[in-house]
Structure formats: C-alpha cells, structure tokens
Amino acid sequence: MGKVFLVGAGPGDPDLLTVKALRVLEDADVVVYDRLVSAGILSLARRALLIDGGKRRGEQERIQEQINEVLVQHARAGRKVVRLKSGDPMIFARGGEEWEHLLRHGIEVEIVPGISSALAVAPLAGIPLTYRGLAASFAVIAGHRESFIRTDWAHYVALDTLVILMGVENREYIAECLIRSGRSSSQPVAFIENGTTCEERVVESTLSQVAKGEVEVNSPAIFVIGEVVRLRKRLIGSQDGSLAIPEGAACAKERNR
Ligand SMILES: C[S@@+](CC[C@H](N)C(=O)[O-])C[C@H]1O[C@@H](n2cnc3c(N)ncnc32)[C@H](O)[C@@H]1O
Image (cartoon, rainbow, N blue to C red; front, side, top):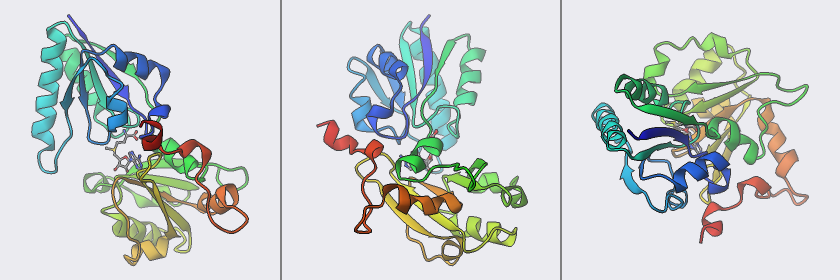
C-alpha cells in the first residue's frame, strides 16, 4: 500500500517551500496539484506523474470527488502520492476533509505543513501582522459568500489586524459590514495580488474607499485591514518616496530560469 502526503507548497516563491516538502516532491510518484501551485514548484517533482486538481467555479464538488478517488487509486497501487496545495494544506484548502476520506479508505496519510499566504504575503510586502504598540492581535478570515452566513462581523471590530483570503470578489460587502459593525472607515487597507511572485502588485487604500467600490484588484490576493498597513512605507520605502521590492519577495520567475 502506498501513502498520501498532504503537502503545503507555500505562497508561490519556490524558495518558500519547506525542506521536507522539497524532499517529498523529489521522491513522489504522483502529484495532484491545485490551481495556485506555480510551474516552478511543479518542476521540482522531476519523476512524478502530474495531475491537475484545480477546481473550476461551479464544479468544485464534482472535481473534489474525482480528486478523492484518484488519491485512493494511486495509493492502493503502492505509489507515493503528493497532494500539493498552495500555502498550508490545512488553511482554507479542504485538507482536513481529504485526510478523513483517505483514513476511511485505510490509506496512510502524512501532513507536510506549508507557509500560508495568510502569514507570509503581507510581511514580504512590508506589512508585519503584529507590531508592538500598534497591533497585538490578528485574525484570518475566509471572504467567500458561504462563510458570511456564519460571520458575526462584530467579533472582528476589536481585532487589530484582519487578513482576508478569497475576499477580492466580495471586498465591497466585507468593507461595508466592517464599517457598519464599528470599524473605522479611515482605517488603512492593502490588497496584495500574487504575493511572493514576479506578478506581485500591492494596492493601498482605506476601508471606506473599498466600501465605495473605488479599489481595483484581481485574484488571488490577500486583503489586509489595520494600522499595520501604514508601516509599509517606513519598512520598505526609500528616501525618494518610492517603494523598494522587499528582500524576501525576490522574483521567483527570474530565479527559476
Ligand atoms: C483556497 S485559498 C488557499 C489558501 C492556502 N491554503 C494558504 O494557506 O495560503 C486561496 C486564497 O489564498 C490567497 N492566496 C494564496 N496564495 C496567494 C498569493 N501568492 N498572493 C496573494 N494571495 C494568495 C488568496 O486570497 C486566494 O484567494
């Protein structure tokens, strides 16, 4: 019987893979990967059969069932299977559900955590999530529709920094709800698109401008709300007022040529 490794690929830059993830990828027979995993990372799985497990809108449940089946089939055939997810496999990635499914089918599972975009993308763009005297708490929230049914926005008013994943599409609604629940409309926000890759783009604004629909941004992006956003200019700004590319977010594409 083979084994399935539930592996986190980190936020994009291949240098942010863990040593363990790299070892497991190099040794894999089969890699089932998600949409946000970059070509640079996939190329590290030199001898593996690569299977695209990316989910298209409206087909998520059907594709998830297929993925579950493929994982079981290959593991039963005695192969080392890597289920590769962007960031960390247990953060908004259905890693726990796949783990349960595999256990129900008697398949051995090993978890290889990854660096989540929720934790790494903002700091690498010059925004620490906590900062003494400015932010002593943070929360990570899913910004897609289904999660709003259970969301009590009042919980998030008192938290210093909010990091919202999958929140691009509903950004106006999210900003409105937070302002209505008592968060200051002048609070600074930042969207970081394609963090840690060559396509990284940072858009700074305020909660009220987002609520008014004045901020253009594309997925994938993290939405950061809080006073810590102001630190960006201090931490990565240069004397002429322009922003330098932070050291840790060097261009993955350049390096992988
Ligand atoms: C389905 S969630 C997966 C999260 C992932 N498991 C993690 O721990 O980072 C996908 C969301 O993560 C965020 N995301 C992932 N990679 C990102 C990146 N490189 N830059 C910005 N946001 C990213 C975006 O909000 C995107 O919509």
